[in-house]
Image 1 (cartoon, one colour):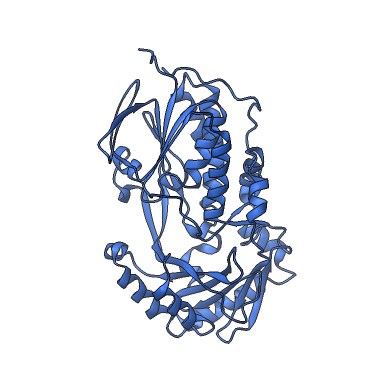
Image 2 (cartoon, rainbow, N blue to C red):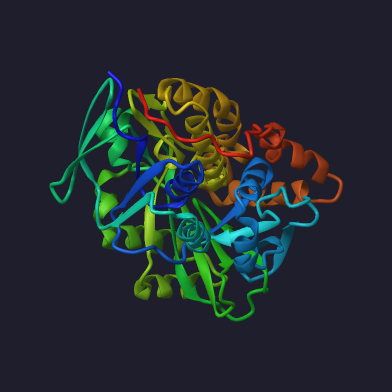
Length: 415
């Protein structure tokens, strides 16, 4: 039976992936509803980067002028010992913007605001954006999806896109429990805002390695503040997820003797208003679509923060999915298949973790930690840089972003 309604897509999640796909759908003339559990846009967040295919997608989406206004001054990564002495550097320029720090870095909140600004200027009445709302139930058949929201309202859509993150409720409701798709990678990560400590080198992302943990202080949009970033080795403990006191206690135990600015970081952790803590996990969903429900971003493919490619995968995935839907709005199943087939080679590379994962990155003993520091010195040396580039960065550069018609296809009713 043919639907008598124009194509109407629901996007669950108002983060980077959700707003990017909504923007492109609107530009293709497709009516779009976005629901976001938070009551307002979330500012701040740690720095994210655009490189290779994701930078190309951002350029085609017209995002680069807005991004340029918020671009961070990041010159590279400095590896620092307990006394504050730099023993190795990964300069952005030395790695052609393809190292751990890219040539385009922006805070997650600023990038999301760039997308929201573009949505505001693009909307011609086809966008329904709802904060403080989320999906409670999904029922679908061959012609559409009935969605029940937290407010109790029920609406029907032609397609639902789950862009609601690592702990996606959309994925849980349609694909199965989180445990089926999430793999704990041996640790936890935290970040929060703090006052920039004295003697921190402007523009450099400082990293301090200690047994079982890594402490970073990264430049923020405001020079007076910085982002503390902590990664610790630990077995998965479900009780940690909602116990902030236990989360902070774990970080204090691990970093108590770290030296450098660890004491300032731990003090700031107690008072910050934006403390974030979660397990380091990888999300793999073999089939990104079930019926008329499709996943993008961390909901469907998260390599964990260790991969450094979460934003890249979200932007590329959103760009491809929206274009494929617009190409055949009367064949959503075909569009969903092409979306998965197109991005899978990129995802397979982007989810790889440089350096062998947490066991190699964060050895537990002092002896192995000293060896890891020596390895960093060697790999960052002038002689070894070409090899380091090939080993750790650049596989995703081989992915060619598909070219789609510049003139959007007109949306037509869906089957």
